[in-house]
Image (cartoon, rainbow, N blue to C red):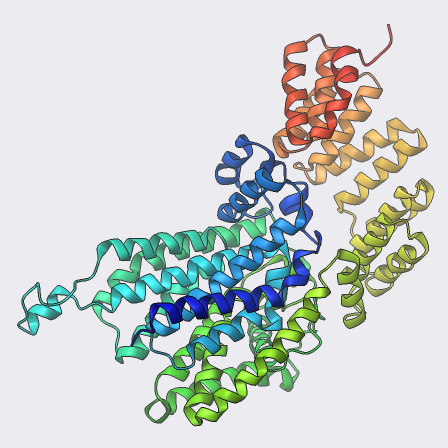
Amino acid sequence: MLAPRKTIIGLSLLLFALTLLAYAPSIRGGFIWDDDDYVENNANLRSAGGLVDIWTAPRTSAQYYPMVFTTFWVEHQLWGLSAPGYHLVNVLLHATAAVLLWRLLLALEIPAAWLAACLFAIHPVQVESVAWITERKNVLSAVFYFASALCYVAWASRPSVTADRQKGKSLDQTPKPSCALYFVSLTLFVAALLSKTVTCSLPAALLLVLWWKRGRITQRDMISLAPFFVIGLALATMTVWFERSHVLAVGPEWDFSIIDRVLIAGRAVWFYVAKLVRPLRLSFIYPRWVVDTRDPVQWAFPIGVIVALAVLWRMRQRWGRGPLAAALIFVGTLVPALGFFNIYPMRYSFVADHFQYHASAALIVLIVCGLSSIDQRWTTGLGILVPLLLLTTVLRTMVYQDVETLWRDTVAKNPDSWMVHLNLAKVLAARNNEAEAQHHFEQQVALAPQLAETHWNMGVNFARRNMPDEALLEYDRALERDPRFPQAFFGRGNAFVAKGDLAQAEREYRRAIELKPDYAQAHHELAQVLVRTRQLQPALEHYIRAIEIDPNMAKAHLNLAALLTALGKPEEARQQFDEAVRLDPSLRRYGDDVLGRRLFPQ
């Protein structure tokens, strides 16, 4: 039975109010990790042409989630780079997702539906998804995900024409399925996928819901969900390819056998269960455990998952199909982030709070419904958790106030991660806290001395401090670990430029490009050296190549404009300068130098 309209509105507003209260500290926060790529330095957000590129040029964005970047584009037009605006939108989207989840649970006649939606809204594990602007992917996709599910359930709940005929009913006796409602559901599902492809699990979840409600899955169910499965599989496959080819989730750090991945997945499932039940010591980056197929304890995790599901299957007659359906939805929604597919964060951790954002709804519903079915007093007890979780979420949200606070909290909880020390070192260096920054640069080398990257990071730090000899030593150490590490040759090129040895710098840049032909920065810096040594035609070619690889490299457009001016091509120079200014308006101040003067004195 549906609740009165005033009750629906009142409880929806209460969900919004509690969500805003829980995440209020984030609205005053700034940009943190990866927010520079997604928002601050994202040239696609600055023009109408950028909006087109968001949809048609996948490699111009950090990931191909055009719905997400379209929302960022709109916000950039409204309030530029004012972080509170982006944070507020994240909070409002999360609140909307919670309300839609509640309405979906009501439609499915699930008891304590509002309490389950409330716990989803204010649970501390959701802070990472809501307070981190980059994770707009989660909150936006959840809105479309739950809205699509709600529309599909409403459509599927209506009797079919065939069923009515079999029962001898006339076609005007009962409401018929609305094709419009079905296609709205499919459209919302595509929007969810274009926000984050982890939502590809929705059609499987809907099948489980239908099985739970009816005890069977009909041919009509399979046919109606077939387009969902096909589209979801296609976009999920594209994401897997994009992670490998663009995000570069490949290499020794992702080199796991299928057995290793089963062990990772099993342990990850129980990790997420534990964090939902006992949300203590939440961390932005969790320690990455060592996978050991000889350790019987590690085998206990995947075996435990199988046993738990088997028990739920065995007890379905006594407990009902609901617990098994919810558990399968929880595990199935986690699958894309369980380690079976390479994703970039696996290089430093196998788990993250934001990985279970969508899946957490199923487990929360299972716990709330399970306890309320045992004794109604349990529902009251869970209600007492609301203020406790609310306070915990507020405190956790404060950690996301600024990037230094976030990394200090993370390094305190995960002191053995070289990645964490590196990111804190970068923040401290940017704030001219040189002594402490140096300490953390040294820590990241000490924790992973076998990696070429840690020595390269140290070299970059020395180069930033105008210490080219020390930088060269670290780059050489990086090459000892990996002789084919292009960033080390690029760093050596920069060091030799600083030392005034342009001939050696040219050789280093060329070696970096040989190892990595699409190294846009190396092409650009090589062009800079070639200009200084008056090799103008080769310089022109490398500027153009840098721009082909990275059309958003504003400085490449600016320097190409200067070269074109020197070559007597003012119209082409003006085009490149205008593009540079479009990408980075602060470059407009170089107009007189770039367009009005020659590179070399007469």
